[in-house]
Length: 236
Image (cartoon, rainbow, N blue to C red; front, side, top):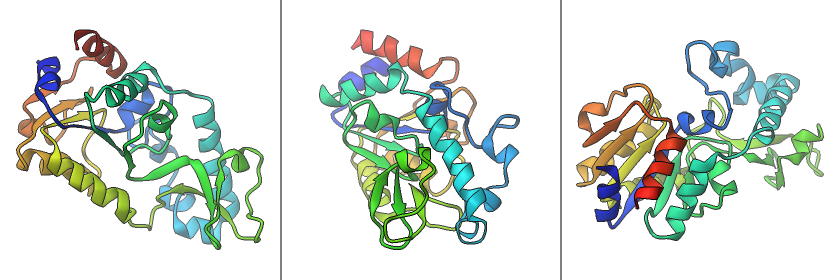
């Protein structure tokens, strides 16, 4: 059925969450046993307050996260989504993830709602660098300002440009596919409903049920993402 929906759609938007990343070996944030926020209080290590008041702890937490991303790589599902974009099967990707794997796999039209760990920038002068700076334990800019990952910290609002573009893409969609998201994080979890209310078919692919399953035209709970995307690719 999903292959049929993809073939019939003239504008397909994909929305990805932590389930897409975890299949590449990255930890998620909110799972009951292994989630990062079960092990660390985000207010203590990943907030604007931590950056300003406990910067060494902040640096070390995010250095470990940068190194964790470098130790993993995009699984085959990312390559398939990139190929589908080139072939015109999908038009854009909205992602909650900060690993930068969609861009690494070659996707172009990506809205990274929470930023990316692939870059850092100076808190003072805003100059951008690659995340290699954190790998090298170089945490300060040429100007002397603190380098921070280009992600949204606790205490900050979502960046307006990708958020507004994601809203626009959701409104344009004929088909909106959620992949690997629990759809519990606001306000980003509103995009599937925006798409549905604008007339799109809604598909939710996630190992666990989500609060929005009742709004979906198709729900898939029993498939690994990489395997499902491979099967779909072969069927298209």
